[in-house]
Length: 429
Image (cartoon, rainbow, N blue to C red; front, side, top):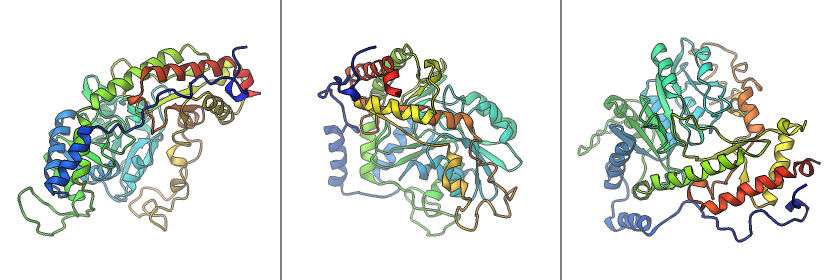
């Protein structure tokens, strides 16, 4: 038996005075960038100076020809769906493990999300299960680079080419991550990023759409701009040529993002250092399975997820109960530990109820290939995803992510895990 657990009155593994850095880190440079917008007096516009500069700089950073700044990553995803000419009755394949927007962007254009289970090692879409979900209605694949780890893009592009499908990268959690030397966002026909304040690249709220295609850029921009075709330097005709929304960003957010972009690689480096340290340390603790990073890609650890393995400890207990007991013990030790996503996306009430926009649309639309979609979204139809969310925890909460913490804090967290798992018998009693 090791030292006394904090849940039983013992000393915490993480000292009360341990330094935690709150995210986002706002510097004087950030403040000056935003104040510069106010002093200039140009606060909005699709071709305002900060927006234009951000688009140019981010396209260069990712390695694409074009970038469009938006008011959210969700908006950028919807723009990509629209640009790909996806509409009523069409189907788009995506991962069963992601944030809801990876699927609702498809519904936003009256198309239908089809989910694929995950690879339990990487948490990304299982490339070996994609083709079985392809039908005559399938138009695109949205691979999600979840938690900052790139998907197996070579295999995904091979499948897409074989079936004539568009590839839209959901890179909302993977700014700067590399797959075989290429940045996420540079490999599909289109890609999207989020600038929400929890992300490695911060804009407060916002998003970015990137592509190498002038045609796709133009279509996406019309969706961003009320369906109008607007060129820089030309007046508006106020003619809408397609369904359009108001997805523009504004100057202060663009200025903040530009300033933060200059430090993105720095923060990613800190995150990789901290994540690699945790992986090396936690892999030596029985009952823990740290995240895997294949040798052909880099992980920026937007989220650091650890899988719990009670069977390795000889413990026969309901996964969620074991997870919650471990979480309580870790929190008592001072470890910043949280949950992110509690069930596979298809188990969300939105998909279980098949209500959509009302009256079952778009699932019951006459353009849909079938009337009964409930089997597609059946509970327990995505066992690897379900097992992951029930058997894992995320180290570091969104206000205190790994990309800005000092190594000493990671050492304290690792000590908390060691202490809890050396006393796991007391934890589960």
